[in-house]
Length: 346
Length: 142
Image (cartoon, rainbow over all chains, first blue to last red; front, side):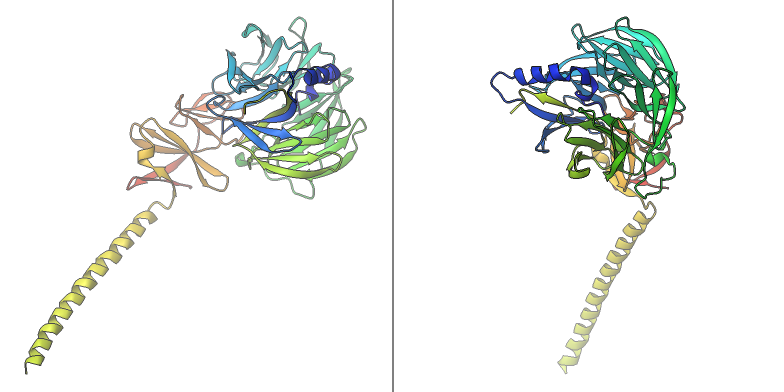
């Protein structure tokens, strides 16, 4: 989920134009940036070659990165770091830190505003959303959103930011223009990865102890359907601390072309592919151990799944519905993003 | 008739040499056994050497399979903890700058006694037995 492309679907046409025009005589290329949370580095993977071409080292990142997202022109990576309660901006051209901002607690999954002036940072241990001005590099305000804010998604209109709360079991809706809490939508369990439909009528959410996901009607703020993920013939394992037992599934994404919804079955090592909008199961793909995140190539041909327990990345062909490559990346790969980059270090 | 005398001396010398070599061999074997038995007293996994873990230091070490441990040297005392966060079971890392055991999932932090310092973990870490033998650190999975 949450390639920088997928998160800003309404702006894709404009963004693509900017991206292709931006390079000054150099061919822009798409890359996947994979945050290796235990290793403290970022694996850089070429698309569509699917080779690990470089690693942004621990000396630049470090401190257990939680999330990595990209600016729309691909110039900047924003990385939240768990150990030091900050967000750093890293240039994709130099792969060096540009600036950092301290936030008031443990930062989780990031989202940019439509105009990229603001970076939204959920602060897990403080129950707030920190709003960072990307120009002044300051936290300009915080919004109380609930307990255990974990994920964030910008609605397709760019007017609402959705924040999934792991501990208060709800989704907070923040009005972007005023940075005010508008609503809290109760859900049956802790909210894990989620996404908002392109028409902003539905929200799809993985929940802590559900092997599947729920569909929330955003007009009635109620769960209208629960989709149970297939098990691929496997038995769901017993809960143990050694298997991150409080999260059955982690990783949910909508392809940029809107045709596919991809959901990870984390405890049984598979990824399920659904057609959209009818949510028909097209197939399941065995991946590595404890798949954690889903993101996509810009052309929607590939889904990428980080397998955090075996330090690999699965490359899935969406039309073929099969894994076409499995790459070794860094230690404990979790969040990742794709973006088109004009210039990278040699 | 000198031959028998020489023979006796030779035989005695040979006997002495055999005894000496046998004694040495027995000592060597016993020494080896002692070493093996010594290791047998802490049938753990060797995770490193003390000279690489100075006071204030820490490391993460595999114990085989998914099991790993955080090993720390606190003022000369080596302690080991199961590297599994009590919040959600994520594997833990060592932050050398902070001298803290950190979780890469939701930011939980533990000190070098395994106590929760900050973040969502509900309980301290499980301590494992650490043994130092001839400079090698062993961690015992129990």
